[in-house]
Image 1: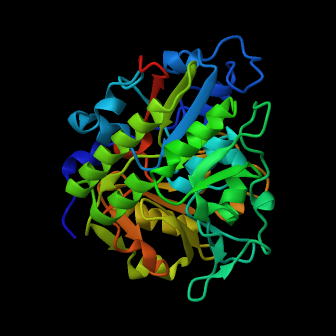
Image 2: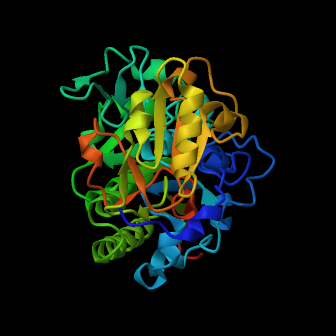
Length: 393
């Protein structure tokens, strides 16, 4: 593995702004106005782009993996997005900056400490590891966990708090009926699409039917970044996403506004991956989380020594933190809900350098080119932009 840049040694984590401009407060903020919410707030917060504060109908499009740093560095490739209201500032994701955690915070309007889906892979009460996105348990022969671990038991909060009526969701058809969809979107009606060209059409249909608030999700940027990194394939996908945003904006009825954000950004890691050393693994019972927010579950009595060992070994590249320290410093948005703490390990390895810590039991993670999960600017900062029905910004 190549040595990381020395500039990372003084890095400071960007903590989520759970009380302000953050994904965990986005949906309640949007619904505090007149577009499908109860309108019981005095005024929508000023960090919302101005068109979103005055809309009669809102489409919230989440583009998985589209970080603010990556977007603003490629302005010429995305004139629709970078010409929209709000592009001059970012909002924060949540911790960890990973899809399962962030999408759940977006939908429920709650920090990870409340909803409890604090990562891609979580420990279960039976000391197994659950893949939250696939809702499966086990490594060699993963099994469907929908009956064993019902979605409502792991994540009890309903989606879209403050909405007067059920909020329709426009997302890939294959996501319907999955455990993770049930966990973060509940019983929200799904308008599924199989090809991307159908996404604007489904949004137009729902707006035409009078829906005041529509939630839409697109995952192409994230997939391309994971497979190819942040090079020419990423650039080509960003051009396509910008066209998609323009197509959706063209479908807006008078008084409607398209709001675009993301769950997290990305950082190029490539082959800069680490397997934990023999001494560390000897004190380890389980690994969970993801490569850029790796949880180590210590063997009984080994947690303190494990924290000392990993701090000495990785402090130049990584924030090495105990679970209690992360909770006390508010990384997850407050005290953890009852029963959630056991889903986490004892020590977290959270790189600020462009590296990742691999889990040998998670074969699907070994070849990712770009990654996320940590609290660097590349991963934590996401856009929040708005385009009105008349094209005004």
